[in-house]
Amino acid sequence: MSGVSTVTEFILLSFPCSRKVQVLLFLLFFVSYILTLMGNGAIVCAVKLDPRLHTPMYLLLANFSFLEICYINTTVPNMLQNFLSETKTISFTACFFQFYFFFSMGTTETFLLPLMAFDRYLAICQPLHYPIIMNNRLCMNLVALCWVTAFLCYPIPIYFITQLPFCGPNAIDHFVCDPGPLLALSCIPAPGIELSCSLLSSLIIFITFFFILGSYTLVLRAVLRVPSAAGRRKAFSTCGSHLVVVSLFYGALMVMYISPTSGNPSGIQKIVTLFYSSVTPLINPLIYSLRNKDMKAALRKIHMSTKISQSK
Image (cartoon, rainbow, N blue to C red; front, side):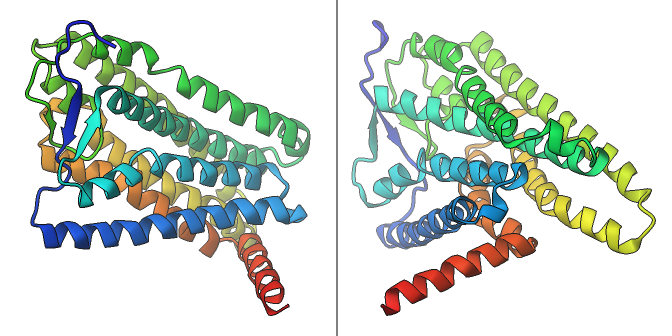
C-alpha cells in the first residue's frame, strides 16, 4: 500500500497482563459478544417477523441493531483472538481495513441517531403529517443514504495515512487500529493529517449532536404543551430510550475524538473505545426493549414460537 513502509505487520498490545487474566478477559468478552449478537439479532428478527412493527420507528431501530452487530464484528473477534495469541499481530493491510470499517460503522451510527431523532420529532411535533412525510420507503432511502455517506467519509484520510513511512517500532498500544496510535508509529511527524482526522471527527460529531439536540428541544417544547399527564408520559417514554443511547454514545465519542487523539493517555483511549464499541452495543437492546411495550410483546411472541417449535 505504501512504497516507503518497511513495516508489514503491527502488534496490537490490547490489554497487557498475565496469561490467566488474558483467558479471563477472553471469557468475559466472548460472553458479552454472544449476548450482543443475540440481543441485537432478536430486535432485527422481531421487527422483521411482526407486521405491527413495520413502521419507520421500528425499521430504524432494526437497522440500528443490525449496525451494532456489524460494528462489534470490526473489533471484538480480532480482540478475542489476540487474548489467546502469543504474537498478537495484524497485517499492514488488515490493520487499515479494520480502521476503515471501524470508523465507517461508527460514522454510520452518528448519522442514524439523528435520523431516529428526526423521526421522533415528526411523530410528536407533526403527528397529522407524519404518515405522509415519513413513510417506509423514504425511511429506507434515508437509512441507505446514512450508510453510503458514512462509508465515503474516511477513504481519503486513510489513504494519506497509508502513505506515511512506517519503519518501526510496530507495536500499537491499543486493541484496534486507531489513528492516534498509528500516527505515533510513523517515522515522520504528521500534524496535518492528525489535525485533519480530528477536525473531520469533530465536525461529524458536533453537527449530528446539535441536530439531535435541536430535534429534542422542539420535541420537549411540544410535549410540555400536551394537556394530559398520560400523554406527556407516553411521549417521553418513546424518546427516553433514544436519549439514553445518544448520551452514552456521544459522551464517549466526545471524550475520545474532539481533541487530537495523541492528547489522551493510551489507557483512557482503550477504556473509552471499549465502552462505545463493545459495551453500548451490549446494553442498547436492553434499553430499547425494556422501555417499549410493542417490542417486548414481539420478543415474547418470538420466544413462544421458538418454544412451540422446539416442543414439536
